[in-house]
Every structure is written in C-alpha cells, then in structure tokens.
Length: 149
Image (tube, rainbow, N blue to C red):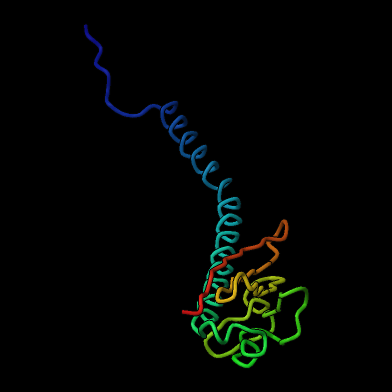
C-alpha cells in the first residue's frame, strides 16, 4: 500500500518563512535612522550650495563697476561696507526680497563674500557659506572672475 502525501505547508516551513520576513524587516528598520541622518545632511548641503550660487549670481549680475563694498551693501548683498577681515564682507544678516538669509535657512549659517582685485580690469568674487550639521561645521565656497569689458 502506497502512502500519499497531502500537499500543504508544515509548521517548520511556516516558522522558517516568518523568521526570514522578520530578519528582513529588522534589517530595513535598522537602516532607517542612518538614512534619515544622511538625508538631513544632504538637504543642508543642497541648501548651502543653493545659497552660495544665488548670492554669487546676484553679485555677478550687478556688473564689474558695482562689485565693491559700498555698492553691494546698497543692493543688500552684504551686511555692511565694513570688512570683517581683509577684503571679506558678511552677508549673514542681509535679506533682500530675491536672496535668502543663511542665518535663517541653515543652523549656525554664516555667509561671506570675498572681493579680490586680480588685475586692473579683473575681480575675483568668492562666496562662502558655513553652517553646522549634527557633527561638525561644514563650508561651501564658489568663486568666479568678473572682467571689465
């Protein structure tokens, strides 16, 4: 007499499948905090990069003749015509209608604009934003040359 096996799932198979599902769920749950921290850091870096680029384009748009502390302060691109160090001006507290304020957008956000006269008709402008993420201070800088043509 032949024995026929009934088709179905044994208790061992069910327990093994549940173990696999639980192991996968735990791995995914363990990576969520790391992914959230990474996403937050990337978001701050993106905001800082956007601020730097926006500020640089606004300054470049004023033209060679207006790239000086007095004019930039008049346009609201820097806080004051008084330098915070050699050829370097703060824009952390300036906030005109078309620019963003690094101290409001980024934690510990500080922005600077450095103006360097390279040659008689050539100016280098370097915009830097420094901010704090959860672990340390970060800096994003972008520079350009503006010529008197």
